[in-house]
Length: 154
Length: 285
Image (cartoon, one colour):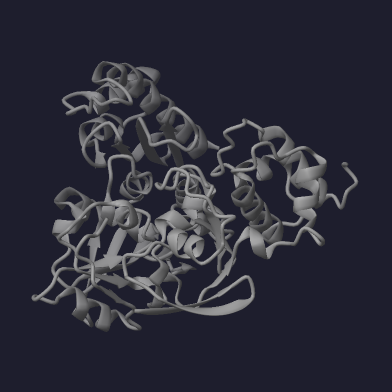
């Protein structure tokens, strides 16, 4: 079966098996920022934005995304022009091994898109599905709050 | 892994979805958020019927409460600005305790009710709110109590080709208090115990008491004996303690790797008592 989706601004059509999970489809087609961590929706390493909603792509059939707009960490910024969240994560040392970063950035972007000035509690809640195996939980909250304040809290 | 899945349908109407689910020559299954089906091993499923194109994602005010579309993500319930009264508050509290933010964007109100796991958080809240479920089998429609649906087991209750389309929840005015507590190892983890309570007062007396549990038993259930100990009485600390004890009495308590039966027996009455106290406090204020 065919499925068409717009990934990071580019419209793409794939010929898929109906069993294909969105996570596998994206990784097989070069979107390697997405990680397969637990495969059961607990760790958030595979988070992507689907029509603006942050979801775990490991619990999503690719076929569910017909006509959807998908954003992965590749679509946030480039090494030359990083997204403000990426810059803040680097500046605050919110990246250690980096495994959780793509998912955490996606969850943070979804929060700031809906709520540009969140409280620390709201940031904690928005990132509650993104486990960090390095336990770097505080620095990423500081990074998101930094972006939300326009750099005033840096 | 769905070993024998070969078809994925995207119906554009409820009638079309029901016709696909009624097919006799193959086993088609309704797909809501997908968080359950995407992870299960079931070699009997041959087709998935995606319900996302049926316009069933909404929260609306009605003359006596709220109507929630079956495909509404529970995150939308958690963050809803129109769920304002005690019933709305309970729906938001229960929805906010389902999994993590990432999961709440995918899990739907209808999926959480129909899949009905021991750890499902919304069903006990729907039970104490006397919620109703709208089920459609193509054009024919029936409105049934969520309690009847849960008691029968939603998957058995729904006939072939029938889907849950809407959940209706009455709102309660002044004199009603609610409480919801989920106990889990971490905030996002599956529940060890879930308690939902609604108390509606008339003067000093309890007019209606509703106490529902989940995670401590195979499926969500109301505890009628405990409710009767409070109804038509002026609640005193002794009566509340007695009702909390009755809520646990004769319960086929679960024992699993998360918590033993003995642990649950010890802690559950305390949670129930605290929920009753909290609901009463709110009902009086």
